[in-house]
Length: 334
Ligand code: SF4
Image: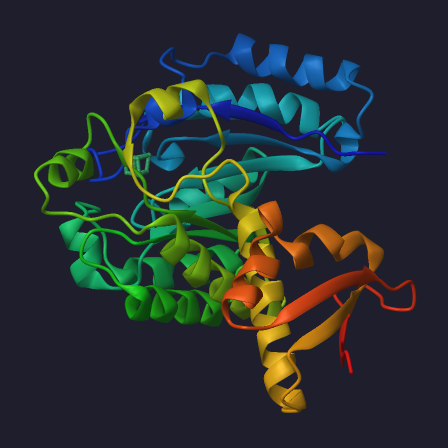
């Protein structure tokens, strides 16, 4: 049976100020303050959905959960915990800032049944954090992550690519440092310039240039390989599609199927590397992949086929039942 996580958005609640890229109200489309009744209504809807809620979480996203007024925070947790304590849901997930974690806060979260904590790390470069008005350091990410793990919570980390002042090298370095913290999950968000944000202004004035879609896909496909190799589950890649996001979009590598683009790019990189390894000088190859990976190997709108043709090589992708998971076999056509 499928899981059905319940996501409640507390946009900007608990945030000390606005980070350069963020307008959570635009991203989530939520402007109203969440109440206990909202939590209950969302949980009840999920319970009636027929999904396996006992394996699902009730999640609070979109703000700095541990920064909101303690009474309000506890009221939301209470409503959620009444379902978790009866075994109707597996646990509670919250997201917050790396500088809003302490032993005292973790004790409270534990008492109210929180099981997973996600930190918006965004970058592990202090200069980038400062330029983007984050108000915390990379060291805060390290200390909070260690404390969260020591207290037995599942740790999730979020990073962004292409922030103001960042580049591929800094983003890859961020990924390396996040991997060292051994999170259970990761979310990767290429930076998008939105209206009513500092980055939006900088973008319109020409001072900030977001990554192109191609650049973001190339970088994120490398990050996927890094996190996969470290056994860290990527639970989100790219922003969710929403009407409000589209309405407030100014510039940046937004695509509703961003993850698929990256996974296709990974296949293209592997095809190129395998042909290089064969080093046989042939101009035509058959690419064997498991049936479920045909579209990734071909690429959206046959992009990988066209890219190889641009490189002077013809490839034909065919399904091969003997190949499992991401298996790939290349044979020259003679
Ligand atoms: S702390 Fe998070 S939710 Fe709050 S303004 Fe910054 S990015 Fe947005």
